[in-house]
Image (cartoon, rainbow, N blue to C red):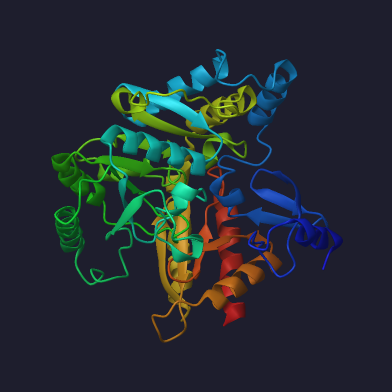
Length: 427
């Protein structure tokens, strides 16, 4: 055990998990690579949990942070803040939500917590619909709408949460159905659920479930849900903390794959927009955002420094068409990984979109999740010079691949080769 690991254990909670048998200290990064304290270089296919969205040490972002920090670091939302207003204008315009208002937070957890506050206040209901296998953060309210047992440390809740089918296409009671039949069955289940309860405030859903292992429903499912929700006056919250900003390649926001009945009422975002700086936020139409009748500010949300980083990062993303790069390079990578998966008895499914790819592992000859194999592949990939993540539903048995959106084709090929070797090493 390293001395730093020993010090970590002495002062950190037991539940603060670390990857790897011998945890890694990352000291610096550049582009799509990071280095550890021993000087080893790694190709980064996880980006600090989908947070380093464009590149490590992106000059445009570091310059913006440095220049803003040299002027003023902090002021709070009690004062006019030019970088915050400029970023809010851009986010509101990109959101697709009419007459949009934007509130900045420091994390995705806090963004979802704010969305729940808005929805329950606006609808005068503490009931929330959430998806099975979902994850929305670590706060008391966010944990209470998380449909993933591994990330739900308490059953206590300020909300009454009802869980809906549909977030996982290839497991569960409707997995055998065609896409159209799957959608129809989930819509019928939602209709039936709403017939047995008081009217909920909102449905919150990740268009692609992140911690759940990059699972998603057929395109159009949440749009079909929206038709039902509209009839009952239930709001739709799209949790875009992991799917936003073009990571899926095909769409800038995940909700756009389900847009037949319009945009969500509320959209939450975080992670990638700051490229490592602590930015989260909520977008909602003005009627919903303005429903609070008591004071509410943010001390650290909308910090001038983080807003400067977000502006520079968003500009770089759009000017260099990183969404298009995610579509092109991600498409090549997922096809390569499917070829690799087809040769392994442990790979049940390779799924995803753009640079958001999951490899689900099972025990050979069964449909049973294999978290031990996922942990072993994670270790073997590190030995080969590649950092990846893991997640999943009932068991953590999905390898999560989410590199920076500037990933180049040779880097995608290198990462695929390392993953192929790691899978073979596990057997």
